[in-house]
Image 1 (cartoon, rainbow, N blue to C red):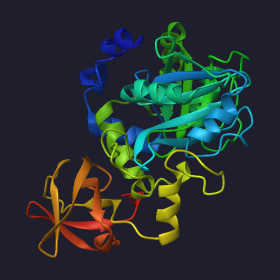
Image 2 (image 1 turned 120 degrees about the vertical axis):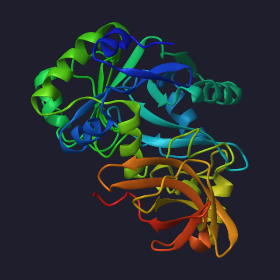
Image 3 (image 1 turned 180 degrees about the vertical axis):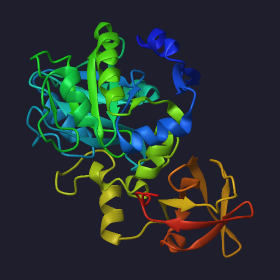
Length: 353
């Protein structure tokens, strides 16, 4: 499948790869240059494969509050958060960004998660006034990422976005389908959500504004490196359906005061006991060594975990990785090995090189 931006991206020299059935730009010819533009200025990314699910009906807020791992009932229109959908055993079925709008709640997720989210939620709708509408084909997303992302948004879209917390959002034209949200795959940025037919025009304006600041389009390879550096796990890569929330380190997805929801008993049990068997941590390799996702980890001559994401970081001049490690070895500075390659456990997010 191709996004509405595919022709523009092709003309810009994009080299494509397939992710979850979609053609996405791997790079625009120079991954390291794209990385540094993202780190030092601002870059724009086609995130349109991300799925969108609208939840409407008079009971939508209370229903989602009772189903998801984070607060929903206390959120006002224009606010949002990151949350999990769990099964009764406390395993993560899906993760999502939740945006509360005046007449609906918009759920944004990885493309492969949408069907599971809708199927699971619909199963629990009995007499509640709750409806679901798939909006992926109607709406797309452009990521504006990097330290100068605000300076790109202002001239390109013609307004100054307010200083917002993560996943706070506005509809500057009063159109609920046109949203500017505070969010990023990397460390900082904004996501522009808009109808598919508007994406090419928005992309050209954002690309022009980014270019004036030394930025430009960024492909999957550089964006993945920035994601790993930021210590953000990706569902289907670093998060699987056997993962429990606290293992991911994403406590921003959890409310410990909201009351019952599927899997809440397990989440509370882990919190009260204060113990995990394993946790997601960062790893750095020696400068001359290559590591990859899937490598088994050894500590004190016994199997201790595995790597889930790995990439070369131009900023650190070495490979870095995310992975799960047994709790007793997960302290920063611990030495482990991946198929004979020595690795050091670090803190997340990774220190800037």
